[in-house]
Length: 409
Image 1: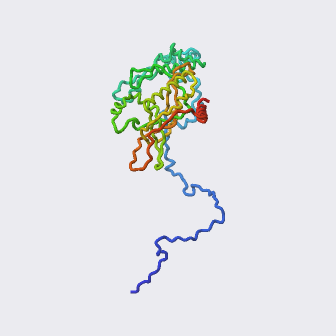
Image 2: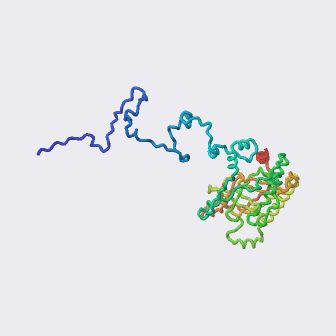
Image 3: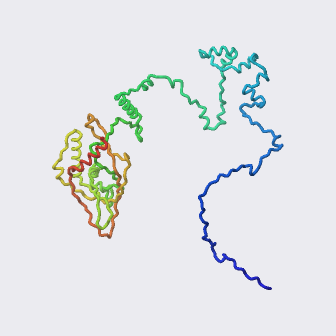
């Protein structure tokens, strides 16, 4: 047998499909959109059959009327055409009194005026029917068949009989004084009503005694304040218990607050460590008492309207501070009016009235104890610093006045 020679198939020697690069040439003219008229009759031509002509289409009526419509007399009944020709003139036809009652317009007979005359003209039967009381339907008492959420809807929700009557108390509330003094008195009256209903959140027997007006603190508004929080009490030493420290020092919470109210927080850095931290310094108890005494003296002079002058003794005295602990910190900005600082004192500009003054805090500082790094050559810590008070410079006073103008203008 002779074997047929194998024919070579072109294009099958490649794994991928062969792509030719002989692209089509560009069209010689710009493309255009031609509107080709087309009709549905091109595809099918509709022709009615005898079955379609013999089938009657159903006329769907509204269930509200429930009466058939005679299509033959529709035009006559609705448009009045041909009515005398088919039915004759029925203008002199006398209707039955029962049918005449159906054609009368309902009129209230208990109202004097033109409506009463119309009611008399409509006949005595219509008047008697209108005078008949309408029976009131009462819902059956079957609450055990209803759901609980539907029972409350049956209760009367209207106002009582005396809801819209003018009482003397209501008339007094309706009188509005638009003068400046009247508006101020109305505002103060609302504050008194609020104080009467104000109660302590945890002590039911405690009520509000007085209210204080709140103003911005114009004296210290130019200063910037930061809210500082500690993870633990900075005056507690970890090497000894808290009770032993209190017994050794013999100090109470009030005496401890005298030191902490005069604390200094100083930023520190190390040449070998790029990280910065804060050092917490406190004065001793005697110096803290002296500083607080001078603060109270200045506050009394300011409250009395006296001019506070620079005391040379205060500026020359150096107060030593001792290092308590190092802290790492994180700073977060405070939203507007989220953290306020309040001070309570007599207002010299408001007839010596006791008032509350507030100031805003710009940022929030969170302090955490810094871990001691061993086996590192760090600079020795600064355990003691000396500080003394000074007067504000002209630049600081100008900056304070600019901050004060922002709220006074």
